[in-house]
Amino acid sequence: MSASPELQREMLRQMQTIRRFEERASDDYQSGAIYGVVHCYIGEEAVAVGVCSALKDGDQIISNHRGHGHCIAKGADLNRMMAELYGREDGFCKGKGGSMHIADFSIGMLGANGIVGGGLSIITGAGLAAQMDGDGGVAVGFFGDGASNAGSFHESLNIAASWKLPVIYVCEHNSWAANTAATMTHGAADVAGRAAGYGMPGIVVDGNDVVAVYDAATQAIARARAGEGPTLLECKTYRHRNHTERPGAVDPRPASEIAAWVARDPIPMLLEQLKQQQGQFSDAEFQAMDDEILAQIEASVAFAEASPFPAPESALDDVFAD
Ligand SMILES: Cc1ncc(C[n+]2csc(CCOP(=O)(O)OP(=O)(O)O)c2C)c(N)n1
Image (tube, rainbow, N blue to C red):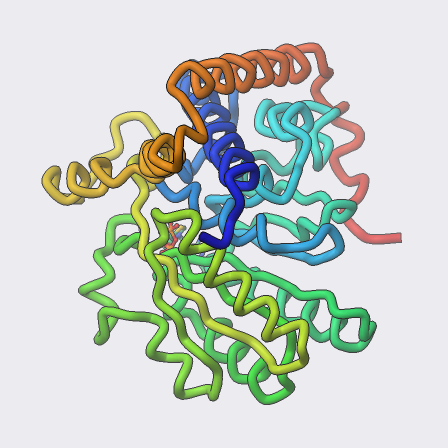
């Protein structure tokens, strides 16, 4: 087993933190305390946590519209995240970005992005910058199966393979792009198969098995650090929730399909695995971990509520970089 029991417990804690953060974000969105739109990552936590656990601090990632999990897995501060969702001045983007635009350059989180496929060319540029710096940094782009049909996906993978950039393209294949089934828009079941056309490895992994994701990411990252170029890592997973938390939105997915994936929830899967590893964890310890996480989430909401809304006259501040 590659990931030590300590690392697995840490991965469990991060996955549960993402889960609890989003459950609260969803509730507060429904009650009107959070504005804009909220896309939940619930069910897909093992991807962000498995990949980010294999990264070093100086490595960079980019996210999409479903970005809370990536931010938390890269170490973003929960208080400032919640304040951003609440539209408050102490949020990561001073409350002007909301759920889909959280960025923290200090931890290598280059940003979420509301434009499907929009992050892929940016992270390819970050990979080029890391290559030019020459100190072994890597760049990771998270995106969905829907984004894999965008032009930016093809252009990015092509240039990254041609220039052997240290980028890992992580496709979170959850079988749906909003209300469109991947079977309607993809001629092949695996996005990873496209990698061959660009001359890079394409790997398929169980995206609900955090240790499997960690192992696959570790290999791809080692390859990138060694100057051997990019990898397309496809993680098969599923979102438990509808595309967004918008009240009343119809979920077109078959109930049986949702139930089958909920039965493979990555969090109980890891908990069970840890319990079986010669008692590396118990239900009581998990309960204590969860209580701690819930207290952190509660504190993040209090932090957000105590923060002021941005002043209207600051609307045009920070639009352009200095
Ligand atoms: C360029 C662009 N086209 C369409 C949309 C509307 N849109 C938002 S999310 C989404 C689905 C994206 O699906 P996928 O990339 O598979 O990610 P998932 O939501 O499944 O995580 C669409 C079509 C958009 N935001 N940007």
